[in-house]
Length: 406
Ligand code: GDP
Ligand code: ZN
Image 1: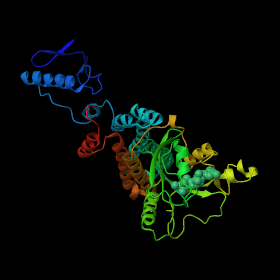
Image 2 (image 1 turned 135 degrees about the horizontal axis):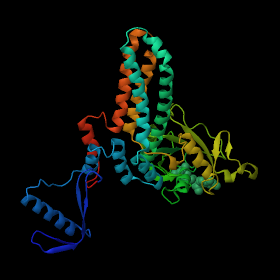
Image 3 (image 1 turned 180 degrees about the horizontal axis):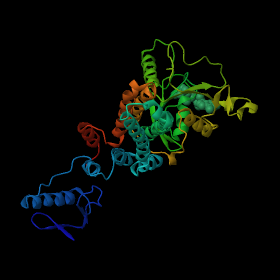
Image 4 (image 1 turned 90 degrees about the horizontal axis):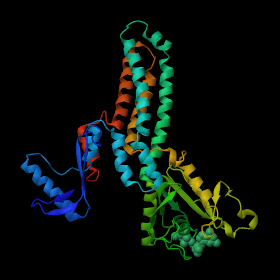
């Protein structure tokens, strides 16, 4: 059809598509115009639509960011985790991340959350039924194996929590920090993994004074590798700033790679001056194995360290596997789903209430109310993920981060 502006001059040849409720994306009646793009044509189409709507007294206005997806959510076409996956799919930085987001959009994550919620509901119903019989509650619950059911719920919750943690990594990527004395080959390793020259490689110790970030992909997992200034105890002001930055990136990291020169005896990198946080996984890597005697060169590891040569490209695939194993990515990317920190936090909260529920379960009659209450709170926490239990202002915040037109 010919699209005309408000003075009825033709501005484009396009099509109009009517999607009838409830089968549209939002669940509402949707009229979609497709033109040839370009700012002028699009503004002409939108301007004319607004003009016509005013004349007909139809309250037409521009959509807010994320409004289409928000309407789909409000009309029960998607739950909140799926709606968030729409934005994550758009932002996906790798094919694997996109696949993971698509899995969440199709409901892979939500179904597992709902399955867990169903089990909790089942146990809550059992408990409510018991509370109606004032006598012999405990025996009744023991017969129904309430504790066994709760154990199963806890196990399912654990699996889902670790899968969601992996899902967050698909979305946010991993922060890996590379530390080591000057000249051990940090910049060279960064280059070797990135496949391009990003850091300055030099034979003069202490060249990399600024930390340099490089985004890369290991088996589809997006990650940011940070090359730090070599840590040295020095009075040099610039070096001091570098050391401070090293400390900061280490604190933010998911994994620390401690690089050593395989040909040198080197003291432990982390000492009193720079502590490796206790919770942080680290991997020791011996570089320059190409300079070692031939007999040891082919070894994949020595003294619990992964052996590589950044310069000759030896052992890099093995290093990638070791990195993923260390950060606890067990599932091949194609089988995962994408999640957000918000989801992990909600699952964590759910787990805390389940743990308290377990404490109260079957102690004696007086704690049964507390048992029931903790189960209810655990159930509500899951509701935050799918949006069943989320305050409106938080909902607004989530959708406001979407881009316009989605
Ligand atoms: P950084 O200070 O830790 O970033 O170290 P660089 O990456 O700048 O490397 C310091 C020197 O070691 C350079 O001359 C590199 O060419 C050399 N080098 C790095 N990796 C290897 C390796 O695997 N084998 C050998 N033989 N030399 C390497
Ligand atoms: Zn360097």
